[in-house]
Amino acid sequence: MTHGPSDALRDLALRHLSPDIAERWLGLLRPGLRLGVAADSDRPVGHLGGLPKLPTDEEWPVWEGHGPLSLIASIDCTALPAGALDIELPSDGTLYFFYFDGQLDEGEALVLPEDRESRPGARVLYVPAGAETSRRDTPGDLKPYPPVPLTAGVEMTAAEPWHPRMRDAFAPQAPLGQRYDHPVCADEFIEALWDFGEAVGHQVGGHAHSVQNPVEIEIAEAVFEGEVTWEDPRLSDEAGSWVLLAQFDSEDAADMMWGDSGALYWLIRPRDLVERRFDRAMFTWQCS
Image (cartoon, rainbow, N blue to C red; front, top):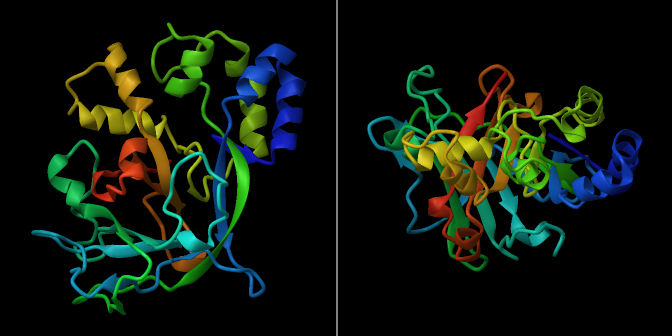
């Protein structure tokens, strides 16, 4: 929902919440790596767009029946600040994020988490350090996005008060994904949070900055294939078992626009992250 330096978020919380509630809320913040367009003097930690270096035995990702995926971003894990996050990213190698962006079919086929058949339209590839790789050109008529170097800074991130983990801390009996009667849901506090850090932005780890309802709920619904209602506690438990791997906002510098100024999200279960099972990551996207 928002992001910023820990001291600034502490000041904000203490202005709007009682000291005990503020401390509980601050205890639920999570560190994230906010990514921005790098200046010439910055050390890049990755890129939007560009071309990948893939293992010699790795085919360019394709959604069968639709076509090749576009490279959205690459993250150089070696360049990330060590120990900055509370998720276990690889300490070296490169993460590549691919997505079927609609440029080959004018946006006819959509990649949606609830549509199992569409899930091959978004993938995460991990290339370990030392792997034999080669630079790949985009296949066929697919046009690559211009490469935009990214820099990273650690900031604390806050989830929406109706996020499953936040709700469990302050109002465990409240309906999933809805506001409830508590100071963390008061209009004054919510508006202050939005004013403080309303930009979705690009990010690795931390709480996702969802455009609409928490993206974790969307993923949980997809896991249960729509057969579990929002009142079922299993949906909340499942939503709480996913963490943000990365999100990428619309970006003028890279000629990227996701729907109506939306964002792309990849989430993963912590145990799959530890085991480097990036093939089990789930994708969703939201726009206003």
